[in-house]
Length: 376
Ligand SMILES: [Zn+2]
Ligand SMILES: [Zn+2]
Image (cartoon, rainbow, N blue to C red; front, side):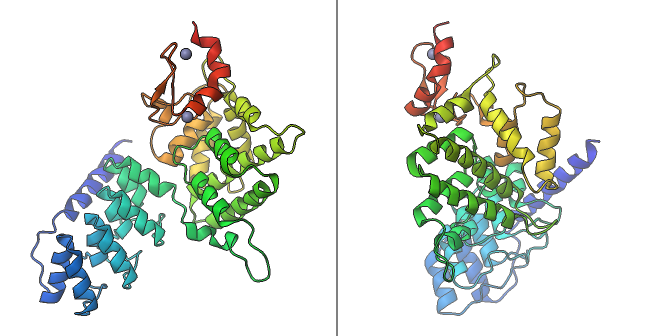
């Protein structure tokens, strides 16, 4: 059963190797050749001059079927990428023989800034190349895990615009600053419910704002699934999870004594094996309410979880984290935060030196649990 995967991986490696053969002689007119040379050298001035003064088209391609934008994206020249986009280059161009998009090019070469620029300009994340791989898959394949996670979790601010600007006679549903906070929550690659609650504590601690945020997320989630074949499944699930946590915050804030710390404590409650049972229950319950039950990522998640008892590994949260980030859960790293599972936690419990935290806040939030074990 392993062979097809191996063959596909070889094929993938060969395709990526082919991309590097750009020393091949290019037969084209001198101005076009000059544009490609300037891009190769990252010579922004020359690119600008050729396009604006010499009217060299941005829609040409070289003999390897690379367009100027594909080439600039592969080399990570973000300034040139931005310039080409503002001069009519198509952000989702697929002129390449193997259907590589500019985003795939930047992903393969691990160029984070270039990827961000392309995503902001509307690069599609679900497009696949000739062997069915997305930009995020390709980044993982070459070990660019941070780039892969960025792409998987990206939500352009533009998609939130209809919610923070008035639509006809209807007022905006949320403010622009609230939209920024929602974007931050949805883009959490290392998703953890406690991180969402902390963001609410700091920025959205208001029941009516939270209710509007939930409506926005639910609407956005529905828009992520356009039809059976066209969907952003990670975003759809992410919107649903964030919306679930916001509804828990709403519940707490509507009580006589509004207190989100109590909610954090509920989420962090552990069993003897150190599994955060509150998070586990919240995530499993939320999955039962997810609307798009045919999405492949959702099916895979549910299948893994149906074979695991609550309170045992792998937890629902770690499965979900791997799905969102495309990597193993951060809890498997050496320096994970015992509260929010952030990967590189600089602080240590000074008494026992057995647990780490990403911040003093996480340390304080966790103390009611850790104090029982710390002295031992
Ligand atoms: Zn933390
Ligand atoms: Zn300790």
